[in-house]
Amino acid sequence: MAVTTATSMQSAPIRYDRVSIALHWFVAALVLGLWLLAQVWDFFPKHSAGRVALQSLHVSFGLVLAATLVVRIVWRASLGRRLPPANSGLLGFAARAMHLGLYILLGVQVLLGLFSRWLSTEALSFFWLFSIPSPVMPNKALADTLLEIHDTIGTTIVILAALHAAAGLLHHFIWRDGVLERMLFR
Ligand code: HEM
Ligand code: HEM
Image (cartoon, rainbow, N blue to C red; front, side, top):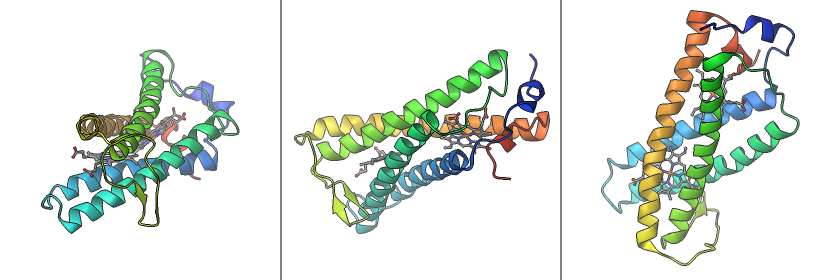
């Protein structure tokens, strides 16, 4: 399968715009941080102050992710620069499916996180500054089910993002075709 990018990229702008690039890496850092927080709090006993604080941080950064995702999607649909696909054929299809899949899973993950907290009796607070009132009645059983799905999707996102990152590194170090540079500041 041809891994050609040169022809489609020569006439096109070589990089995404700075806002898209900044948003891409900010979302990537948030996703990694949110996942790491959830791994770390497992070392703390249930209901301990440390565990609760890490969970509150997770929820607060989760709200930051929610807002950033909205900005990212609005930006992409409006002023954001869209580049021609970096690959054609099956590889191009796989890349597009991966990007779309990540957007969808991130959106679903945000909704599951928000509703699992709203359905529990714990407050959905933003860095201990203010709380967002729940639009739904508490339902502990449903909250637990949503959290299980949230847990599974969290792992799935991290695995897919790792594959996606591996593809980026393959483009850069093996194929040397400039695709990683599209998502890097000059
Ligand atoms: C949690 C981590 C990450 C997420 C959720 C993520 C998500 C995405 C998404 C959704 C796109 C599509 C952009 C668009 O067209 O709207 C994209 C593009 C891209 N990402 Fe990531 N990404 C992550 C981490 C990384 C890492 C670690 C690398 C590099 C090693 C990377 C390299 C790239 C590159 C080069 C593109 C542009 C591909 C192209 O132009 O076809 N990403 N990423
Ligand atoms: C891609 C981003 C995210 C990842 C990878 C992620 C991952 C996780 C993981 C692995 C857990 C542990 C689940 C368990 O122990 O059953 C968790 C719990 C949780 N997450 Fe997320 N999460 C993300 C985004 C969010 C967002 C956006 C919110 C909402 C604002 C959120 C809210 C929660 C809540 C409320 C919990 C339960 C904490 C508790 O037990 O009190 N998460 N998350």
